[in-house]
Image 1 (spheres, rainbow, N blue to C red):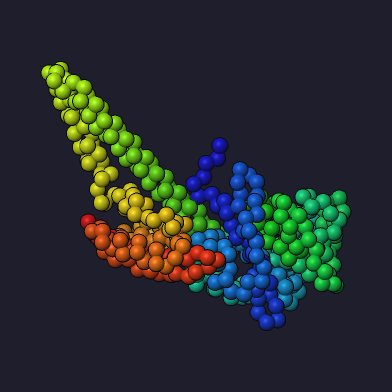
Image 2 (spheres, helix red, strand yellow):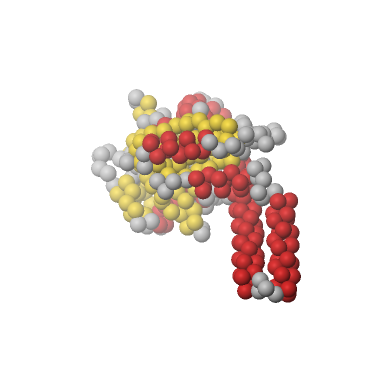
Length: 394
C-alpha cells in the first residue's frame, strides 16, 4: 500500500471566467476518497476571492481553469514544433498552453502569462496556494468516457467526438444551458471545465498537457504536501499521546477503585493491610511515571487541548484548531519557524453572548496570557469566529 502523509485529497477547482468587465469565479470542490472522486459542493458567479473563500473555506488548495475573453483555441496537425504554427508572430514563452493530443490533431488553448499572474496575485494576498492551471474547453474531453456523448457543451464551445476521441470543436451560438448528471449531481456546461481539471489533477492523462512552472505551480504543490505532512504527523502525535494519557488515567483510576474495595472488605486483616500498602505503592509508581512523561505538564500540548475541550459549552463547536502555527510561509531551503506560544481556533457558536462568556471563563485560567477575537460574523443562524490564544511562557 502506498502511504503518503503529504497526499492532497481535497481541492477547489475554480473556473476563472474572463469578461469585458473583468472576471468572475465558478467553483467545484472535489474530494478523492478510496480512489473515487466525490463532488463536495459547487457554486457559480462569485466576484471576488473573499466570496470564493466563503464557499471553499480558508485552508484549501486551488487549481484554476481560465476561460472566456483572451483565450485562444486552435486545432492543428499533430507534428513537431506545433506551437510555432499557432503563434507565428509572438513569443511562446509569454503564454501558458493546455494541449490535448490525439493521433492526427492537437487541440491547444493558450493564455498570456501576464493575465494569469494578475489573477494569482489576488490569491497570494490571502496566502492560498495555486497548484495547477489550465485553459480552454478541450480539457473537459477527459469526461467523455463517463458521459459517453458525441457532443459535449463546455462554456461557449461544443466538443465533437467519434469513438470517444475528440475530433473537432465549434463555437456555441445559442445561450441554452446544457445540464449533465455526474456523481448523482446535476452540473451545467459551465461546471464541466472545473470537473475536468479536477479529474486530471487526481488522475493524470499523458495525452493532456497542462502548463508547468517550477517556480509557481510545482513549488506550491510541494509546499502544500509538506504542510499536509506536518499537520497530519502533528495530529497523529497529539492523538497518540492523548490516548496514552487517557489509558494511564484509566489504569490509575482502576487502581484507586481496587484499593477502595480491598480496604472495605479486608480492613481488619493484616494480610489486607499489606495488600493495600502494595497497591498504594503501585499507584504512586504509576503517578510518578505519568509525571515524568510530561503528560500532566503545562508544556505539553495535550494539556491545552484538554483544558479547551473541557471548558467548551455545548453550543460552541470547533472546526479547526491550529497549535504552534507557522510564523511565515514555508519555502524550500528555508528553516520552518513556529509560533511557539499561540493557538488559533476557528469555530461556530449559537450566539455572541455564549462566545463572550466562554472567553471570559478562559481568561481566568493561569496558563492563558491573552485572547484576541480575529474574526466574527453571523451566517445562516450561526456565528462563525476565529480566536488567537496566547499562552503564558512556562
